[in-house]
Image: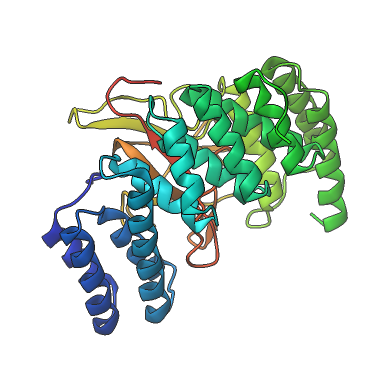
Length: 188
Length: 182
């Protein structure tokens, strides 16, 4: 079994075996575009294969790949050309969660000393759990400005999740818990 | 399990967690107490009838008992603790899932083409726990568990993926680059 990024011919073979001809053509056109733009291709292939395994219609698969490609472009534009691939992929997820490119730029500017992959994964998770996107973005930006470590973000996610499960409002939980990182007053 | 039962279970778990904010240690003890009490009160659900709620609580119990995921992708520390794979560009990551009533469980994700036959999980720890260890490249990966070939289930201990292209989210694990653990 191979669990690493696969080369373009292997990706194409996988897609050809999983998709109908029309969807395959649409998807490979988009993966070719991503490759030409030096954007990550594996996530796009992954979405197409996930759709095939979940027996999604071809049109839906093509739309998903298209939307992901747009998000990857937006993430790289917001994070900068030197952003690492995992940061771009996580940034695309954040944009797909509804966070604005401007907020993503602010987080990049606030967190220049550490990789942003984990903070952006946590940001998307907070939003998925009900924290309003503006609140979640400000919490992560504040943590990044405080030079938080990956373990800090992991703890933030854990405690916010616990608070929500215990009945706290997601926004209040995020605003309160980020204090443990920033050491300052709660976000308002 | 009925919705009323689920609501009650929700309340019990919430009560346990409300006791818990002082420390992880207290949280673990409170949650394990609540789950043990619940387990005494209920019979194990029949095969195929296990609700996602029960699975979530059961998985939480094991993750806590396992020391919050040391060496596991499914612990609360979702930045996977890893060991070197034979190929130094990859790291071994262990995935663990609790599903006592499942007949089979497999791991699917962007690393195996979402193929439910590619990465079957093995029963460990008696009957309840399923696990598999695989080499993964550094970076962000999305995955789910497939229970009995049909039900795609997220990892209750891991962050949720923002994308839900096909109506359901997945889980996220981050494999650190090299030995850097920022």
